[in-house]
Length: 131
Image 1: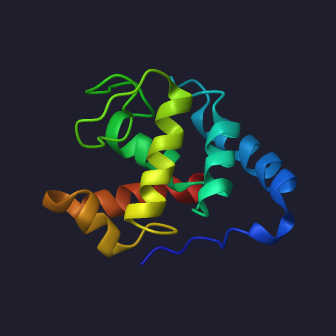
Image 2 (image 1 turned 90 degrees about the horizontal axis):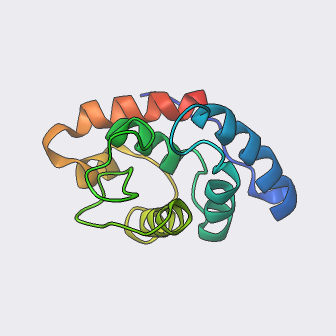
């Protein structure tokens, strides 16, 4: 299985958000989600989840927000739609925290995308490794 580096939550909120904002912004550059790194980073901090997870899912599900099946739904998240990227990012990250936990696992992939979970897992974790 692919390995991810650990996320250091001991650095404090400000350092955590600064570090992950730039990494996520670099990853999302040129996409509809470009510039939302700080929103992803703060949501990850507030919910205790891997800050790479939601941005990576957005690539697997919608090419980073380019092909959404509902307004502002870059994650193939049920039948949900939102009124802004900020609202959507916060809702998705909170939903990951409450429904799945800290980060990606094969079991979480099976729950998130049952029909093709191993393909979904492989694609998503490889994107997480890029962030």
